[in-house]
Amino acid sequence: MQKKVLVLFGGVSSEHDVSLNSACSVIKNIPADKYEIIPMGITKDGRCYIYNGSPDMLPEGKWLEDKENLEPAVISTDRSHHGIIRLANGAEIEKIDVVFPVLHGKNGEDGTMQGLLEIAGLPYVGCGTAASAACMDKAVTNAMADFYGIPQAKWVAFDKHAYSGNKTALLANAAEKLGFPIFVKPANAGSSVGISKAKNLEELEAACEKAFEHDKKLVLEEGVIGMEVEVAVMGNEEPVASVVGEVVPCNEFYDYDAKYLANESELHIPARLSEEKLEEVRKAAVNAYRALGCEGFTRVDFFVRTSDGEIMLNEPNTIPGFTSISMYPKLFAASGVPYSELLDRLLKLAMER
Image 1 (cartoon, helix red, strand yellow):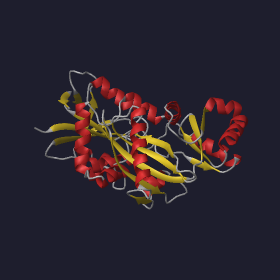
Image 2 (cartoon, helix red, strand yellow; image 1 turned 135 degrees about the vertical axis):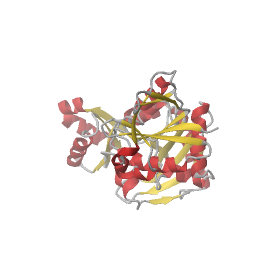
Image 3 (spheres, one colour; image 1 turned 180 degrees about the vertical axis):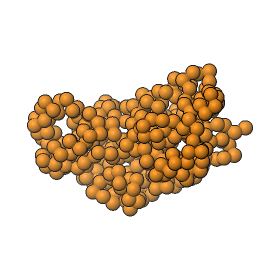
Image 4 (cartoon, one colour; image 1 turned 45 degrees about the horizontal axis):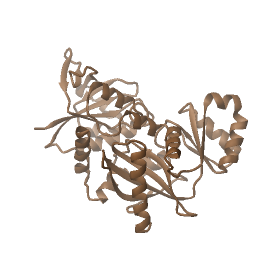
């Protein structure tokens, strides 16, 4: 008997459009013989609709123009419902077996949606509420990595209130502690949104102003010269790591355009490292996954520093992209797990948990 899967997409997030592309791929590749798929879209202003049309209408927001296939609905927080309430004809309850939140960034990847699904009593793909929130906030992630002794770049963090009152001292302290170049990141914006690379104090100030457009807290990190590598990790109590992938960005660093839009960054699967170093990276990925409390799936990104080969945590991504150029499915495909089987495994992990 088919299980009902609620696939959530869109969201009130700066990564709304990427979510539409990811969800299009996910909906097309979930095994139709095992699952009945119910797509639910969240608009940029937070309205929710079941979408009964073609997944090809998702990219570029075309699904919202397809009015006859839109049906207002909400996730019910009444656990006895165990699902959604369709609102087109009064209030029709529909039970759901499992939820796949294909939501990137704020209000989807940061523990907020996970908390709602926990209240609703619905199993869902991916990390729990606490791990989602911790991995979304780069300052919290970095603090946890320091606590667990996971090597990473030197970093500092401050919020907008502190910055407005003591800007000169904070910038000077960052320059002294980290040296240039410095990467400036909004703490909670998600994949490379609002990130800049600063090479002097003037650029550092401009980078902070830009990052504050996306979040009230910033993380500043030293620039690491090295190879950028990524590992897809999957599992609950016994996580497994994929082969290691290497990213050679088409831009100066692996920013939003390089990740999602340009399609010109070089990818090497497996990464161009020795067998021993590849195994070290895979072990480091599972170690970070466990330390940060991840479950279901996460892509864990590292630098391999050129000067000494040190493996340094860059960031975890708890709902990685599932577009046609995304690393997570590509890495598991290279590890012998094709896309549809990967989705099936992730849904089963959610229901087992």
